[in-house]
Amino acid sequence: MVENPFMFLPFNGGPRICIGQQFAYNEASFVMVRLMQLFDRFTLAQKEAAPASALPPASWKTSNGRKPIEEVWPKNAITIYSKGGMWIRMHLASSS
Image (cartoon, rainbow, N blue to C red):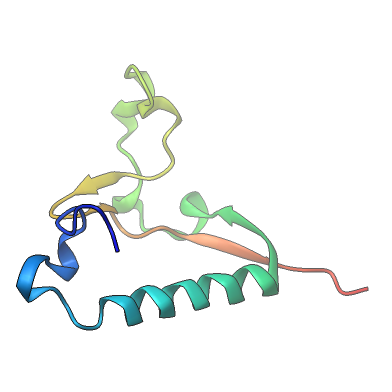
């Protein structure tokens, strides 16, 4: 149980909270654990795989703060997301 159920809005909060919230958290946790068991390394593949429109604008390279080093274009609506998705490359664990 979280202290403030309205911190993450996709599940709503209060008396109308999503009845599948715990199932969704459990399922997401299971998928993440299985991915970490199967792959030994994850690398960002934005530059190679993401559409050009999803990459940060060239003008960011001359900006201040984090913008010059960003490889993804963070956006926000009700939740935070990456424009064009988060493209990653999964590397298989070497079998001995």
